[in-house]
Length: 310
Image 1: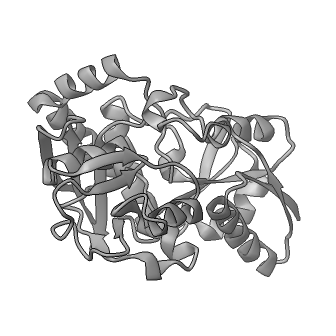
Image 2: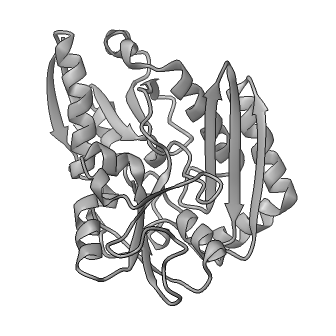
């Protein structure tokens, strides 16, 4: 079968697309990759929390899918809004890479070691809020660009440390840059972090069948749980919400946070359950009820929300 994959043009996005392409080729399919430039790729000099375009890393790719220019799209699931159009479906969620965040630094091996007044870079309001809660004495600065660009900025001395997704560093063979993997109870990751979602046109049975071998049941349950929480909280956007579900022995443990951007209020909740969607909605509802709703109302009033960059 001949298949065309749509992908963003970043180094990490192309790694992900090629990773999926190689598995499909092993099964006898002919695969091409079409690079599609998204709104999020074109706006590189503004902090993401100030741009204001929902689906800014996915919209143009979905348009290509709808127009039959591509057969499937490979997304970082944390980029994909929770309310997918009925035109499309996530047909496969492959085995997840490490979902946690990583501290990268040339001089310091932990957050605790960073000096008071140290400069730390991140593109994410979620990370920034948790950093401010942990270390209010640090200066948090916006950080845009692909993984290599961000690491170069660190190496040139612009920052004392930066926070990146561990998954992206591992996929690009840059584990050497990781000084410390941050535990979930220190830095709760974004919903869907470390996971890929393969999107196709809804009801495209031939493509769905070709991709079915990639779908990992445990990873999909974790993702469904985290995205249900995000959806319940009005998310799918670049907001200070973290969600981490872990599948074990047929059960899911969900840990989640919502934080004020200044880090002065960090609400946490966790629960176990079997039904991924119900568990996500339960924890999301509890967080909203216990003060999360007021935090998010304030965030939405102050900024135009959009997806977090990987």
